[in-house]
Amino acid sequence: MKRMVFAITMVSVLALLTVPVIAGSPGAYDSMVTGKGDPVYDIKAVQDAVDKGGKVLLKGTFDFGKKGKVSIKNDIEIIGETDTQGLPLTKIKGGFWTFNSPLPSKESPPEAPGPKIAIRGIHFDGAVWTPLHFAYTSGAEISGNKITNVIPNEVPFKLKSGETLLWQSGAVFGTRLVTKTKLMPGAVTGNLIFENNEVDLKNDKPQITLGQGVWTVLTWGATIQIRGNVFTNVSRNSIESLDNYIDKEGRGMVIIKDNKVITPTVGIPFPSPSTPNGIVAGWFVDPSGGIDPARYSKIVIMGNYVEVRGDTSMGIYISSDGAVMRSNEILVGGGSKAKGIMQLGSNGLIANNKVQGSGQCAVFTMRLKTFAGSRNTFVANNISTFKASMAHVLLQGDDNLLVGACGKVIDKGKGNKNLE
Image 1 (tube, rainbow, N blue to C red):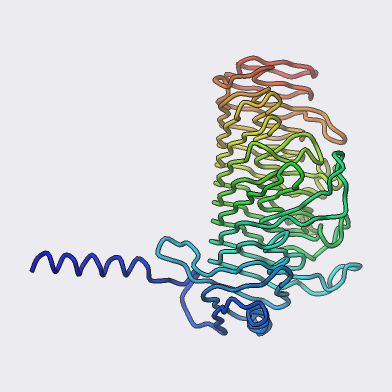
Image 2 (image 1 turned 180 degrees about the horizontal axis):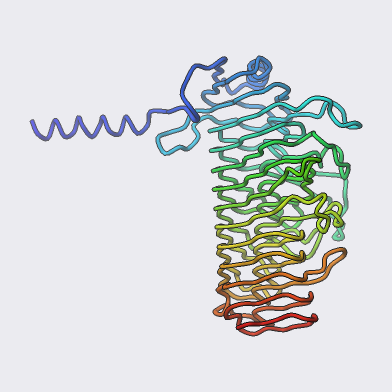
C-alpha cells in the first residue's frame, strides 16, 4: 500500500511538472489563438487577434512560412504558454520579421506615439533575418522568449571576399533597417526592455553573416534595458547598442546588465576586423554623436559575463563619452589580437571588472575618428593574471588614470597616470 501511494504521488508530481502555465500576469485575455501549423490559417488568425489589441494568448505551434509576418499597429500584449521552469511551450516557426511594428512614414517623424508592445513566453524558431523588428513603438517589453535558427537574409552588398553579405538578428529596436542612417525622432522611444531571453544565432556561414543578438539603434529618448539574457553563437556582436539619442527633455539611457554572452570562434570581419564580439555600445552611424552630451544617451554596462573565443574578438567595446562599466567578468580565449575592454570614449569610469584568459591586452584605450580615449578612470580592475602578448594595459589616449594593480602598462599617450 505504501509503495502504491508513493507511486501515485510521483505520477502526480510528474504530471504537475508538465502542466503549461501562462507567461506574464494572470487574468482574462481579449483573444486566444491556437496554432494549426498552417501558414494560411496561422498568420491571419494571429493578425486578426493583434489588430483587436489588448491581451492575446497564443497556444501550440504556429507556422508563418518563409515570408509571413504580423504587423503591430495598436497597443498589444502577446503571451505564450510556458512550462513550470518558465521555458516557452508556444512556438512560432518561420516568418520574415515575424512580428513587425512598421513606421507610418519613412520620410517624416510620426505625429503620434507608436504602439506599446509586450511579447512574452514564445519560442521563435527559423525566422528569416529577425523574428522581432520594432521600428515604431513608444515602449516595448520583450521577455522570457527563446530565439533559435534565425535564417540569415541576403542583402545587396558585396564583401571584400566577393561574397554577398548575409544578415541575421535576434531582435531589432530602431529604424536602421527602414530609414538607413536617418534619425526619426519619436519613432522608437519610451521604455525598451529586452529581458531574460535566450538567443542562439548559430549558422553555417558566420564569416559572411552580420549577426546581432539584440540591436538597439537610432532610438530617441529611450530608456533601454538589456538584462538577464543569454546569447550564444552570434557571429558579430551579441549585444549591440548604437546611436541612441536623448530627446529634447534630456531623456535617454542604455543599461546592459547581468547578461551571459558566449561567442563562437569565427565571426564576420565587417565592418571592422574585430570579431566576434561580446558587447558593443556607443556610436557608429554618426560618430560625432558619441562626444556630444546634447545627443548621446548615458551608457551603463554592469554585472555581465562575457566569454569571447575569436582570434580578434573584443569582450566589451565602448565608443561614447561618459560611459560606466563596472563589475563585469570577461574571459578572453587567447586570440593574437583579442582584447578584453576597448575604450574609445572619454570621461568614462571602468571599475571592478575582471578580465581573465589571454590575448593582446586586457584594457585598451585609443583615438579613432572623433573619439579621444582620454580622461578615463580605471579603478580596481582585476587584470593582473591576464596573459598578455603585448601588455595588460595599452593607452593611446591622454590623461587617463589607472588605480590598482595593472601588470604591464604601455603608455603611448600624454598625461596618463598609474597609481599602482
